[in-house]
Image (cartoon, rainbow over all chains, first blue to last red; front, side, top):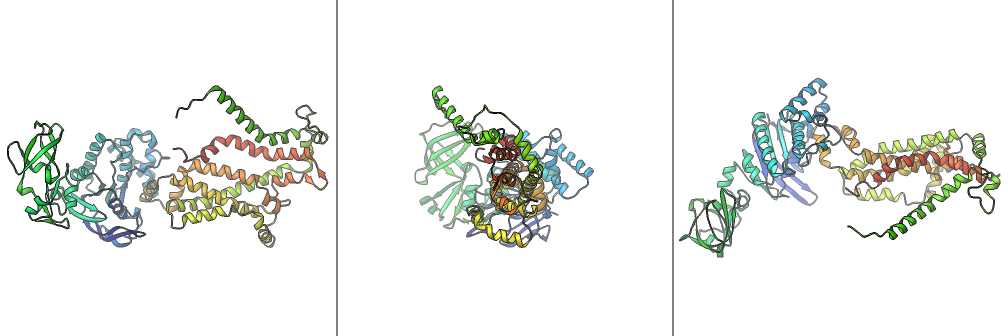
Length: 333
Length: 276
């Protein structure tokens, strides 16, 4: 089965420590998303699991076996790359079947598997085309097809949707989630997009400078961020982070309140603020307000809210939803 | 970048380009012309341009005196042989340097190129002695080895630049798909690099075909290519300009034709990566 464990996995390039040492246990069939800003080491971590990067020290166990020194293809994992990485000189059929050919599978069996995969991915009529004759979404499907025919224990996705346009991205997101449901295989998905992380993951692993900041379900991270970093990274629009006198009143270095946990009133409240900008999204309105000593804040309110920039309103935070962080940026609970 | 180009300016530039082109081509043209003259006309003063008695006599004499085909076959063997062997070594080397560079890769590349900066005559005596002691003088195998080593730096450099253009992720994908190193090179890298490999191959065939220093120094008869064939007409008995020209024309004709047909590929290959 497809359990994946990292045991003090460490990666150093020359003098640069990319991953100081990661410990993580991924259960069989789990959909885990690695998320973090660019350069946080999430792709490196994925490539270490894939076997494309050697570990400096530590170990990787897949399905209970130590795979640290094993070749990428022997780990029972398939990978979908950000650039799709299709073989440009091969047809779609050639691309999907390449791994099976390398494994020395009989021709008839390959043919059957390829046509089945092509059917699931709506690629049947494109089997004889070259990748350059396909659209971005189709190329992405071929890359996924190449991954699924090998019937792996686990799938590794390295920012697979970042080259697609917004509408297609939402579609492919749903397709990948459906695929996860159908196959029940372990999936690790790397993205810098916290919306993808929130919507797709069973568990999210937030990475910051090569360190695992927090691991948990999307709602755990949303409701109980362990650090200022996670608080600021998860959730859209971003959590308002306030430091200074207001924070000290609550015996914290920094306090955080999400835009959706601020009550707005025209008459009275905790913080008087001046409205600078209003973004009307239809269902929601985001107000960007100047809260004086608290700095700029974002408030989420319903779409009908009529405001004029320049007007003064009052904000009251939901006390139960206030997050407090100490000097080290860790949550105080 | 719309720049105004006047008709006058265009005319001048075109004329200049033609002038330079003709100037460069003139020696070859003159050689070909001379090859159709008699020995007397070939050295006549003032030189005769187009109005002389055209004759094929020189070609007949040249073919009679020395067997053109034997030399030509040797040229083909040497050019193709050295190029193919070089590719077999250069493809994996360039792969390693392009996709798994170490800290010294750049130095290594520079070092290889620097071997081309040494005048070949500096290595002549040691190589000649090695050839003599190992019985390699005037053997095809020996010359193929020397020509291969001679052009290897250029081939590796060219392939290295082409390979650099290929996204590493594609090779990694093949590794995930279970391709061994050999299969990765054979089924994925080489087919993708075909345009680059083809122009490297063509250029190297041309370089090997025209190489005169080593082929003249190390061959006499059995392995002698067309360069020897030409040189044999500048002999102690005297200079026979018309016959020398006929021999030269015969020697350069195949490579000229190849170059003509391959020029599109060559230009494409040599500017590969310059414009995306």
